[in-house]
Length: 295
Ligand SMILES: [Mg+2]
Image 1 (tube, protein in one colour):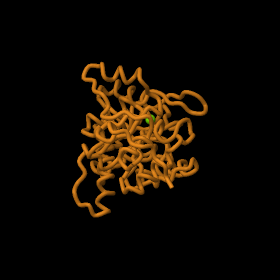
Image 2 (image 1 turned 90 degrees about the vertical axis):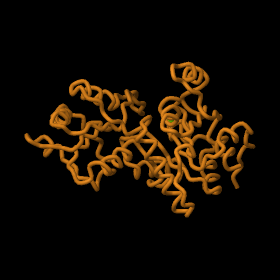
Image 3 (image 1 turned 30 degrees about the vertical axis):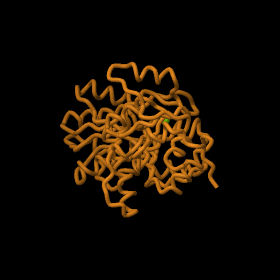
Image 4 (image 1 turned 180 degrees about the horizontal axis):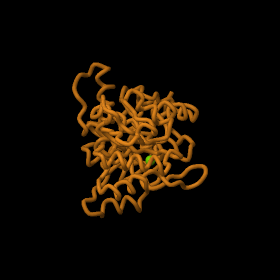
């Protein structure tokens, strides 16, 4: 039996009309590899109320299958097809735009599984003089970011390949410390080619579009028929810029939770910035959001 807190009337009103949720992972469901208290109960309550949800994360180092396995070890059962990641959004974009064309994907081997039905150039064939690619896709490549592979990406971009980046994160925290993320490599290639990469992860419109599409498919399977509008979806996140503002710009509702990295100081900043806007709702955690929707 799941016990949810009593819904705050304000939160219930702010989330009125929401039919599906995109859930950020870090700071919403897990924090420093540990489950946030109540996260599993919140997901169970959404399932019980038949409110579809999709995990929406900028992770691009591993595939959704691996992520799903890691989450199940932490105590959350989220199948891979209920996850949209920066890597899977890049694969989805590539499938729609470059289905039968060769592409060069520079990403860690595990995340490359997302692209297995696409025509991928190997590092060797991509480095061939005269090689052509419809697109160069860059993600967290780790040790694959060799000078040779980055040069290959540069050469293909110069020959007219489309430039796709999973995200432009500067750094990230791992058990081994703060690590350089792929944003620096994307920035280097942007600088050298004088072109801008299309970003498929948060906070891009492409990413949120992928999430809304996935939720729509889940509702459709239940026979509800009607298409899901972005305004009927709330992005629940702890990052006021990547999650909340990004979602709002794409026409979704931004449901901020205080259980992760941002708090009152960032909340004041995001509202006072030029073009700033408050989140559509503010709650302490995913539990309150779910109680307002399903309680
Ligand atoms: Mg987060």
